[in-house]
Image (cartoon, rainbow, N blue to C red; front, side, top):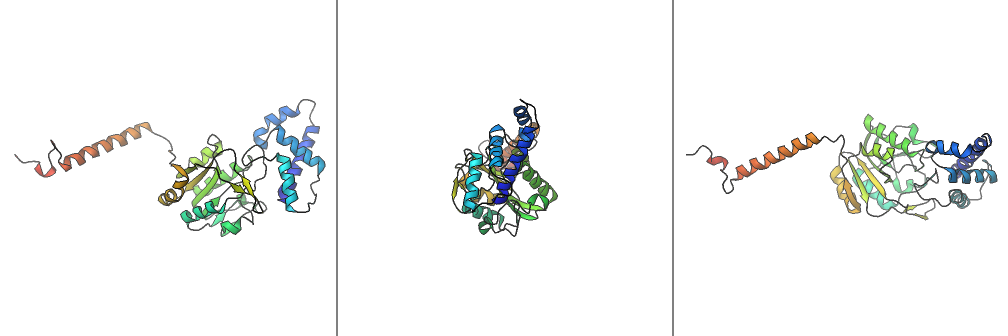
Length: 285
């Protein structure tokens, strides 16, 4: 938490330096042009600069509660997945971790976590903000609840897809918000075997055990792996499960329909219903 807060203060300091170096009237245009790269807009930038004006990067805090209070103040009590890098420490409730464990069997790697979260997740190998999971391989079965900052989540998604293509990740369950129109969501869906869309929003919790609340939008559980039946059995009660279709081919769809139709006709003939000769009647006069 402390390192994350210092990072935010440093970001505010650099934004102020950039603003001071621009001519009058250029600041808002610069923010708008770079909004996608930064991951936030004018409101978040203003709060970051105010925090930087009040605190220095090396500021000390009495305890983590004070640091969390300042974090909320900076982001205006932003919720998970809204504008800005925000507070990425949205920890997954234990019941969802246990569901993932039921499907995966074990969790070999958690590449985006905290030491506190590992009291529940208990991954064989895990990486925090300090050890940076993006810099390591993810061999085996993976649980991923990526950081939700706009500039970070695409990196973790691309890393997951890379690890899947390499064969190092043998199975994975990933929890994200259901931003179906975002490029990173489409990238994940393109390689997922199944996606569960829960009928209720996940109520995350924050470090220390306090309930953080539900985001204003839904979530999605992605499954990558061979045991689709297990995923459907465990996560199906949460909501509907979708199977992503890749490279849809209408002609292939027609071919499959024709094959199914002919198979039905063959079964009907073999059964020998009214007006249909049975196989053993053929050739008789």
